[in-house]
Amino acid sequence: MRSTTRLRSQLLAWLLLPTLTLWAAGFGFSYWRSLAQAHAAYDRTLLGSAQVIAAHLRLQDGEVVADLPFAALEMLRTDAQDRIFYRVADLDDGDEVGGYPDLPAPARPPAEQATFYDADYKGERVRIAALRHALPDGARQRQLVVQVAETLEARHQLTRRITLEAAALQLALIGLAAAFIAYGVRRGLAPLKRLRDEVRRRGIDDPTPMDAAAVPREVAPLIEAINAHTGRQRQLTEAQVRFVANASHQLKTPLTLLRAQLDHALMQADLPAMRGVVERIGETTELTGRLVAQLLALARSEPGRPLAAEAVELVALAQQATFDLLSQARRKRIDLGFEGSPPVVLQGEPVLLRELVTNLVHNAISYTPEGGTVTVAVEPGPRLVVVDNGPGIPAAERERVLERFYRLPSDQAEGSGLGLAIVKEICARHGLALQLDDAPGGGLRVVVAAAC
Image 1 (cartoon, one colour):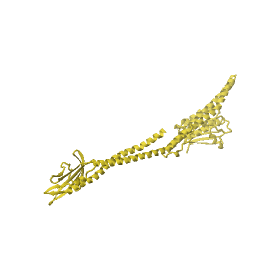
Image 2 (cartoon, helix red, strand yellow):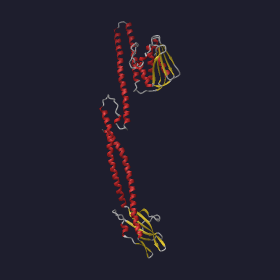
Image 3 (tube, rainbow, N blue to C red):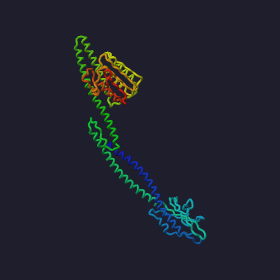
Image 4 (cartoon, one colour):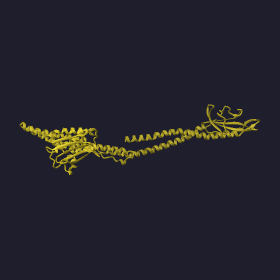
């Protein structure tokens, strides 16, 4: 439960933190936009006051008189108690007509359109509207500038109210969205919780794949990868179980035989009789050692085990493996020959490839009658060919002899029935093709070649 809760919290954090960051940035942008809108609204009122003042300017005895109506400035009053200032000046001679003479003038005389600008006045920030007004004076036009200034408290109050209301609404929507997201994440993680509970309920020996269709599509690749890993672990476990079962079954008989032969040797009174029994013990020990080597090779060739592949020079490897079995061939007076070629390189695990050659040559020697012939050849391709003139294998039995521990009913040679099964497993691990054929003149011809 803690793991799904933590995942839900992380998802919410990754979703909400960027949203809140954007909300904060939007808050600043909204304030700036709202202030611009407040300026636009209040600037129109400020301009209206300037136009009303300009409309009430007149000439009296050659002097400009500002007959300022009460409504001109009253229209600017707000609940914020902003302070209002005005100024009327002659642009031609710079004479002040009325108002606050120290009100900051515009940087440039205003054109036909009004000019708006900000300035500092009496320790406060003010917004000023400057309007150019032409007053007829006989044959000429007297150019006047009318300025109306207002402090900014009302504008800032309006901006804050608009911004805070919008931000509060957005924050409420984010909170509502967070609730929906939390609910959605919870619903989305429900299949994972069910999957977790299913895995917890499983026994230690239950390698059944998990159902990837019952989880969100984004999680399905993870479930498939876990199933693939579980499948590999199942293969390794099955290989270990098979190895233990095969080893216990196959070693039971020779160990029992060794114990019986040892007891028989201890019962002998004379040295020659004991010597004969000890020789048989030696033969049984040799066969048992061969069986152990085959079982270990079988374990190494299991599909679930990683393959430590490297470049192997097949001619030298096959020649050495054949030479190691030369003494066995001599005991049966078998002509064991090797035909090499230019170096042939094959990618594979040297230990397994050597075991492949050893098993083929050992089988050929074991089933070839005394005085027979066994030939081992390595050809480009690469191809390994082992030919003997023994009894061969009937075509109907050639698939079954590749099974573990299977032996022909007419088989009289000593062995465990693992040799060709090991060869088949090693070929499969290395992508090699295994073929059993009749040899010219009788016997068996085994070809191991790179698969097309």
